[in-house]
Length: 128
Image 1 (cartoon, rainbow, N blue to C red):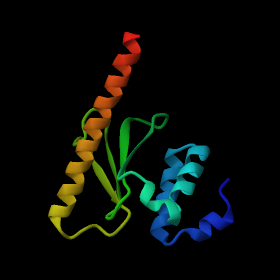
Image 2: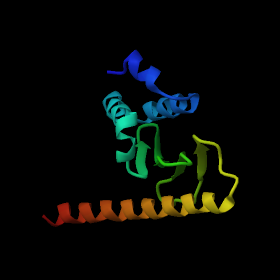
Image 3: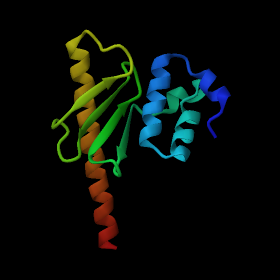
Image 4: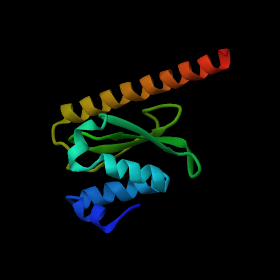
C-alpha cells in the first residue's frame, strides 16, 4: 500500500501534511487511491474540488478540498456552507482578497451543486 517510495515522491512538507490530513479522513484504501492519482503524471486529472467527510468522528462536518493553486481545505457545517467555516491553507494564503473570495465562491457553488446532485440521486432511487 503506502510505500517508502511514495513518501519520497512528495515534494514538500505541505504535501506531507496534506496527505496525513487526508489519511485521517479517508480509509487506507481510499487514501492509497488518492495518493496514486496525485502523482506528478496524473496531477492535472484531479477535479478542482473534492468533497470529503468523516461521518464517524465529525458527523455534522464536511470538507471541501481545493486541489488547484492556492490549495486549501474548507471545513464547513453539513447544513450550511458558511456556518462554522474554517479554511486550512495548504499553500501560502493568498494576499489578494479577491482571489480568496473567488475560491470561496467557487467552493460554495460546488458544495451546493453536489448536495443538489445527491438529492436528485436519492429522489431517483426512491422513485424506483
